[in-house]
Length: 462
View 1 (cartoon, rainbow, N blue to C red):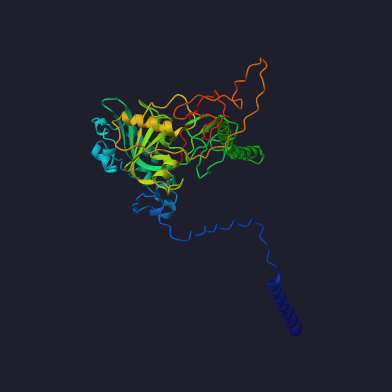
View 2: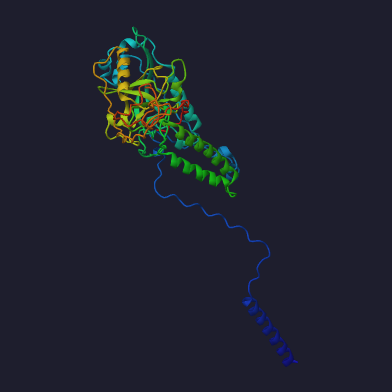
């Protein structure tokens, strides 16, 4: 019995040991329940120092952190106001210069250059446009406060010293005086005068608000690029994979590009690099005595007076902009990205209602004469106005088209050498005769298309 009992005990122990070994060696059973999603990892840490005080150009930042007792963390985590940033932008609206002494602080030469200016200042000469300008600035600040990257810089908020309505007591010539800085407008193109483009900097527009019907068949130098962008937008719009939201964006872009291409086919424009013109906010083109594209103007800087015209219209919250031609004359280092004058030392004088009914490419000699006459109507100037020279190289004179030896009636033909009629002189910008050395030749033909005016589109200033 003892032998049998011992053998049975040994068998039980051996069996137990065998089961333990098998259990250790067997593969782990995979649970039938789904595996839980892994906890999201933390986003990568932005390396380098991020100074919020330097994020926005010229805006002084005062920052504090305030704490108050709260409920438990689980509760406060669900409350939107438990962890909040209150953003308040404080902007001081400047007062406008009113007297000749205040104007002279901006440019000490001004009373001497234009001795009749003092008599043109009434008791309260500040134009309502000054208040409208800063109202527009404040409105833009409120609209963009949630997008701090879109806020006006300190430079662009304080870009206007004054806007004055003035009138000469004897001649009753009205003018609008503006003191501001000067940014650069390099926009515009004209295939009739310059078939090759002058470049396309950022935010470049091949058109200006002042325009006239094209006279020649040469295509606008920027038309091909516009049509290429239009084709790409139309092709993407036609794709089946394009989302509805993207289609809406493309639809707007297609409409704008089609309109731009049509405008470039019909009109010629001022050229920022060659023509002396200034830019006014869109609000200046409305009101009692609005300034319109084509009105004559003066730019006064230092001891010099430059004749110009109002050639382009910009946004309502910015002032102080002139063509690259004027900018380079004032400061040779000027480029589309480098303003000639950053301080508020430029005086712009515009003459509302002086634009001619007919428009055309610039004639700098007539521009000179017209501005000199207007200066006399505001009391004269003690220095001669700067004289602009034509810097557009003349186009080669086309070979005349052979004319028939006789007309069917036997009388000589009266057609021009190219069979094109010459338009009559217009504004300060008449078309020259075939014998002239200016770039506009006898191949130009008049057109009856109406003159269009562009809506304010101007780029934001840096």
